[in-house]
Length: 496
Image 1 (cartoon, one colour):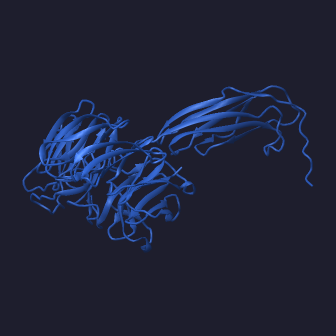
Image 2 (tube, one colour):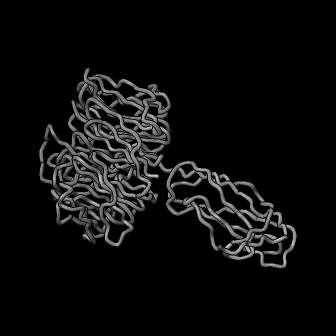
């Protein structure tokens, strides 16, 4: 039998400088915190501090630093920690050795860590106004689990999400278009607001507690865009625009402002203030012989500008006034002339360094087309991809992830040059991929018509590590839910 451990006679009472820490950390950021543990008494044996951390969302920094009869314990939140509120415990104790086989009586104390990692909202097409499709978190595949599902009679078009709530639009059998809010934890409906009759509508967008959608019943120069309260669905105002029987793109909100593209004959960009419900500007970008986009597009925006694809050009507008500051020619556009179906499903993707990526032509998400990149400092395109792609690409660390047409291959392109630096082949048995790519610090999520796949990007040879038996539009909510919007409803999976 093992030898009996002899406990030291000495008692070393420990007090902590603080009993707990309350931390709020923004997505992708880290925070340093800690405490000092002081003890009273002496011992002829060594006095060694032992710290046990009760969460993977933070870690010990170095080893506790001894100074007289106290130890300073330094802690730091994990880089790209998963979102949400958690409460966990750090256990401090004093031992006679590093193995801590013998603990000094009275020395064990607990320190509570209340951590709130606040992920950004899934606000619009591909999550943000730059349409990057990137969420700055790391996940563990072992924690992925099915959460809930919501059935719909007709397909929703995508979601918007904030902490605690998910929003989607759906056409009911009676031809009414509704926005619904559901509880992120349970999938239970919180409210429903009727947007009117019709068949033409977008997915919702959200910012500053307001939900926006483009939904229309008939052609008009005063089509209303209702502004809904995210809390209860009440209509607080509306913004008017001109359009004729078109499926609008997902609006692009930034703070209290919202930007979108429509027009009775297309190629018109709008800016509005959601707090007042007043339209800030309307800019007609039509140019004879330069192509047209009438429906489907989500514009992009940054701190100073709005970016609008009009076919033969990429137009850059001043965010405040709507004035055109640059028109960048797209020489690869082919569908010239006014088309009643001037469709472009998607939107410009911004890399934050002056580069913008679009597809070369009018398109649906399944239309195979090359990608073209622009630079705000150049008049001619920066590059055009050699291969054709489908769906919505995503951006991470200066690399563009795009689905190669008619394959289960995702190419990774350098944003500066368009060069394919590597590829991820999910396997021919996965069928053809489509829809949008969502990236995190740890995983890539991508789907076919019938399944969704997760690829661990940290692996030496990234491959599929998880799958779900539903395909469709993908989004990650601030509550660490992967939501798949399929032809039959919404399916949610917990990632953390």
